[in-house]
Image 1: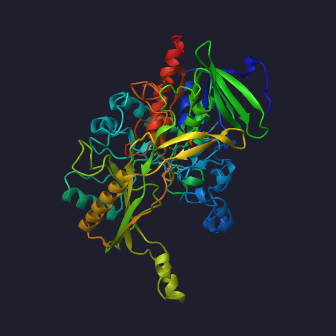
Image 2 (image 1 turned 135 degrees about the horizontal axis):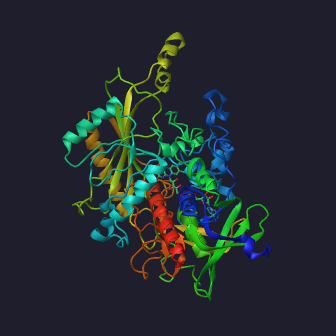
Image 3 (image 1 turned 60 degrees about the vertical axis):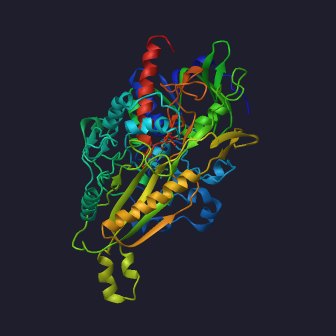
Length: 571
Ligand SMILES: Cc1cc2nc3c(=O)[nH]c(=O)nc-3n(C[C@H](O)[C@H](O)[C@H](O)COP(=O)(O)OP(=O)(O)OC[C@H]3O[C@@H](n4cnc5c(N)ncnc54)[C@H](O)[C@@H]3O)c2cc1C
């Protein structure tokens, strides 16, 4: 590797953002909106909205291998093959296992998308705000540190993000599932509407509401300005949406930032580490390895936003060693890389619903209903586990497969195939896991990746608390399905490894006390204030909500704060 000694001036910007995914795209947009000359560094290839969605409009008969991944590819890529969204139509956005090796001290399915837009191209787009109880729960019940910010402080930033992104949902008036600036919700089908009635009349503390998601169910001026259009409920989102109807960095924040004239974007740029200047006592830039030539270049800026996704931003800090920070930038507390948490996704159950056969639904709705938490919300309830869980649920009619299951052939079979099958329902858990010191990542001392960067070691696991939560969910779920008259109920514990939930968080947590956290209430590294971390690495706890909306809200808040501080000359 050579150090490229290009004139410092040419490589100097006001701000550097590392990573162009959900949070990095938002950081770039907010900084550029504030007139800040911003360099966006992305390790993957460029992905241009519409042009680079090769499978977006394929009909089923045009799909290679009927959309299936060939066996040899699955065998070579066991980790990514376990992700439900990985198939022939989406393969080009995912990182293959062999492309960036890491060391699993304990099994961890790390699902990555190293392309411009990151996982914003692939996400399922569901998301709820954290409630005040999500922020207060960990310290109140003693399973985490106190968050340095309150719900009320983040509330306007949630609104800011929802307004720009376009978030569909219903205003349900539930205190622990705060409403937002919503577009109209998708409709529940007839079985779900009945499910809602039955559950809400049987339990005073349980609600079934529309899933809230980043889809344009109505196009407002702010979305027209982004060149985005209405969601047609094709549910082919994971291939990239040519209408820009679901939110991705590629359709929304990056082109918006580009239009300001303040953005410089460099792809194939793998950030190696942050440069810390001992004399100035602050960071001055980043070291970047060219993904193709492996040449190293330095870029400089007054502020740096790390948005490379939770584990990668943490890894960059761990790899940023100096005399002042021998164990990684900002690691005075020894907590960098620690308290990695994720979502408990193991439990699932379902069953068959009799009747409703004269009812159907229109389109392929890209989301389903959810049930906000009912355990440990307002206090630690009398249950044997800590933390809350949310239930994702839904009802649908079986497709043509139902007709193949019996011995019908010929014309009868054709007729049957054209009819929808019986109704079934499912419930799955999205549970809060406890941030623990032992659940950690660190860098290998001897193994490096293809860019000469130390490989990441993952040492993260489920625990006894998670097992007890799953047991409670399966018992409660069975009882609820029974209340609804569901038959043939099945329950399952997938026993999947952490990571497959794709909601990994922590590693550089926020906190009031620099002795037990890495970031302050503005997402600044406590001991190096011009470095901000606003992706999932910052999360002090993970609650039970899909997290990306919260990453965006933190990012928008921190970016606007940074802009103000720069104007005041404080950064
Ligand atoms: C199938 C699937 C379904 C999901 N569903 C949901 C959902 O419904 N709701 C929800 O809230 N979340 C969901 N998620 C998770 C969501 O996608 C992530 O939480 C979110 O994308 C994280 O945003 P981020 O900016 O931290 O990281 P990413 O979006 O992953 O972006 C990180 C970017 O940084 C780049 N990068 C990494 N390292 C470096 C480096 N060293 N130098 C330069 N660039 C680097 C990457 O290439 C990438 O482009 C889902 C994810 C997947 C894959």
